[in-house]
Image (cartoon, rainbow, N blue to C red; front, top):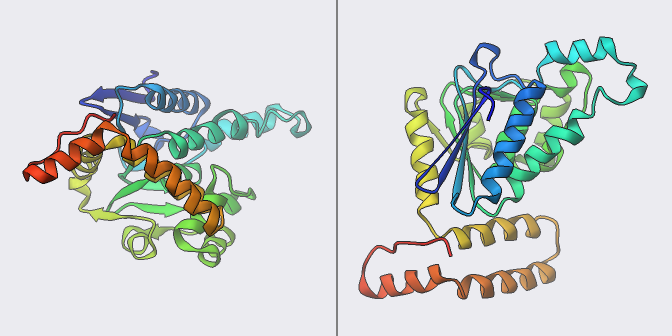
Length: 265
């Protein structure tokens, strides 16, 4: 991986770290490509059972690198289409990897998460947020619409009315409000964020990851399908989970009053 994105795998946990602290982890092309590739690698690696996505410095990510964006804007005729092809080439694959990989993704939000940076955090399955971190949709502030699936994830997190409010009138939402509204699942002191996010991610990596994959799939399916179809999907996924080795391990450990040691199979 490029130095702008760090990638490490240990004990079934892949840690993906945005590493442009001097630019508040702004997303230039090199960073977007490295992040996309790191997430795809984590998704396809059978040895990875959970993913922690975080950043270095004062920001999780402030979103698109506007200096690079302006340079492209000045060099290209907008009708040629190169200006916004980053959505198709980078943002869409990044969010799709986070949201659809069959393993849980924890966002350790260490600071500002704005624009696409907020979108990446919203797409994660679990968000541990530093107490001085914030979220900002920011798109309308530069006369753009939502990307990075924010129009899909944010209404599901906080409801359509609040999502419309934040998109039409972008502003910073602090950690306490993010917790109250359901964006954050945990808020911790800033100095404790790295260890707190790591603890959550490690716990998931040690858990029944086949069941987690089914839970993730069922939540995504249920959000867009009626009750009868969702019940059928739950039955299909439950049958798959019931045939897993982890289910047998969990039942045997329960009967023995022992802690189960899951294999992810």
